[in-house]
Image (cartoon, rainbow, N blue to C red; front, top):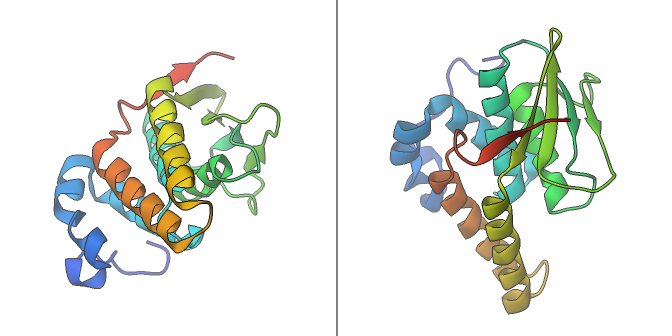
Length: 178
């Protein structure tokens, strides 16, 4: 921890809907993933779908390519909602724009990133079935609530909580070759 002595894990410190998932989610994925997703969404400004996916992807990349400094090329682009993945990548890897360790590739946005460290590289992409599920769920929310209405953002929050609990970082990504 850089600032905190320990990360707050007591359910009373969280919003009610988040407090309900803390224990089973930590039991399933570990406290490190919990911390990174909480930090990501605090930075991101709302509990988001792709920010959560980005945090899961970055943590998984660090497990596959353990290094203090990962150089990342994100293919998530710069347009929300997909670009929100970049926030999760930065928080979960500490490879930030400020450190000059992340590059955003704007061509053909997709939920994919390349991670490089110490002469090794790995590219991870959200598997098509998960990407399609997210796209369909977001389209449903837009159709029901429009964009940027309070009801839409509550819908996104509910989805993000569900994906956080259900999507296992070791299962939702595939490695891709360059």
